Image 1 (tube, rainbow, N blue to C red):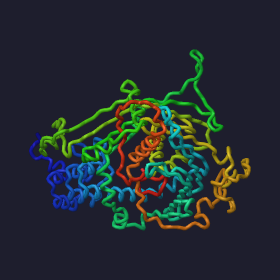
Image 2 (spheres, rainbow, N blue to C red):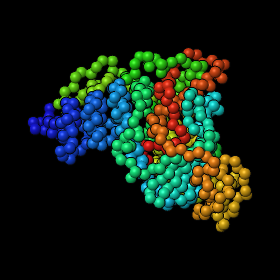
Image 3 (cartoon, rainbow, N blue to C red):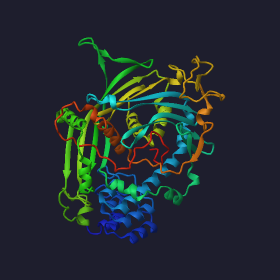
Image 4 (cartoon, rainbow, N blue to C red):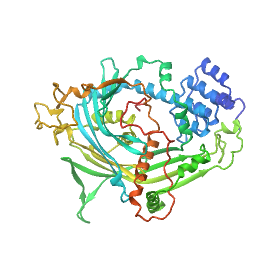
Length: 553
């Protein structure tokens, strides 16, 4: 038991007031003296996490008013928003969702000067990034999407062209879009989303000085429909666990004559590495779902679904796949504050909040890298800031960023293959640096380099404008301007990125399932395959790189 005079009210004053559900006393404590609002209790929860898990709405409101961090995870790896969803409290979900988006907006805007400085220091370049999805499951790879991202970087200006926009209405969305990020002299930035199909430009100026707290909070007010979509969909998280990752050079040749393997990738000789002990962990919570929503998430199975079910059986526990389920069928025994706040007291299988229904799927993968030590691009100085910016609103680039931030062997990753989903890998290949392989009309070599022949590439901007030297290559500055004849619209739409990993999984899954009718001839039996969690009807996946109010971190 806790020693006299050292009770939870003295060691964890904010947590204790939250436990007692005393919002007025909590606000008085926060306003009267400096307290540690992010202090962790013995169970790994901040005061905001505790208030959310207990469903104490007014205490959560007070803590958010004083700036409690919504984006922190508790000891079990769940965010405040995910815990709010588990309570099935619509008002609490709306409150947390609003402040999460507000805090992401503030952090994003505060990070603009740092990003501009990184872009300014990095050498300018043009590069193409080819994304391909592959799978060990037969017949799957050919129906997975692919895309070519074209990237121009000049000074504090960046442009990205793409055709894979996202997932909506049960199909992959294609279009011709450009996303432009242009730094200003006053450490602000202009972001433009150019819709070439509709000839419309959505523009937004990013500057922290022009926004106060109330203005930003008003701009990110979630609707009841958005909050309800959370309560009618399972909570799912997917993460790459790389703490035990190991890199090893691939070998080639026959036994006794084996040598370290190298391959030519777009004209560059690259060493081939394998990355082992990469675990993909998917966790799904469903305790907040009503019975009709649980049954809907299981739904009917297409022939392809059944086929994938058998395919999953083939990787079984012996091949690194492990599925565990945790169910609490009854309410936990009442926990006293003395028990909860005593770090030496074992709660066993008891806990606060709604009884958890959790399914965890763990599968080991082997990633692959092709590294070139003589490549002109620098990963840390040139490419990493671009990937950071893209990762704001793109789930694919977020996963790529997580991987390249590891301590990789020396060299530039001209090609990377990493797991995205338990049956899918993403293969990213860098090529056509500065238009050296295939000429690009908007880019030409500097006078001290061999200039490529002119090109009539329709996807590039016309070279009618004057070229500006970009230290190694010259770029048409019209790339970063509003195209002539396009309509400019201020961006007032909610561009907050949702839980992009959930939506990416849903998009991939539906992309596979919608092709199920093509494979009716595959006799696969009727084994049930647990599908990934799906957002409620009306939810849509994030666009490839739309301006977003998420953190740069």
